[in-house]
Image (tube, rainbow, N blue to C red; front, side):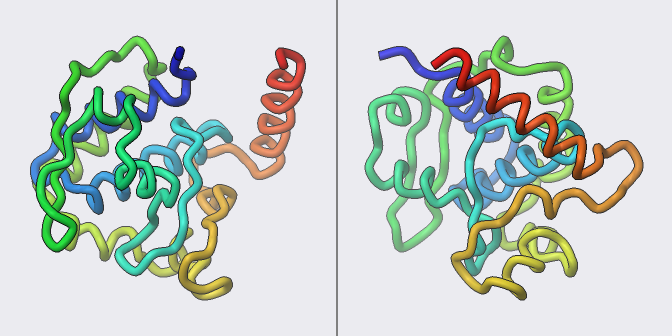
Length: 183
């Protein structure tokens, strides 16, 4: 069965992070994917992987990917290996080579920048960054509590170079119209 474009991006982003950072376990990976998606959304109004992130104790987590790691569907098994037990660190090791053809130049830049910043960081040292006051995880936790969905629009904070909420909404509508036209 063919894999969707966004699924290819997700699998290859996992491979990239596993190959280009130290101590890449599930928790660190979840944070890196969150930063990838929310940084890209801030710049373009679209996430890279189309994952939804939720407020968990150790930071933002893609609940569906977490479930998939437990179930190990075929495409996950073909792309990565999880090393360790559920009681300790669970490392993520790439089984396939990273394929950059699935990414735009912007997405590749964000992937590289995140690896440059967090290459040597352990997950527990990334908690402070992901729990930063008045950022998406913190705002969602304060307003909706643990396990709540984190809204991508919370990434927009009027920083230079980011799109406006109106532009993001328009791009989402355009994308939905395109997708419905090809169904």
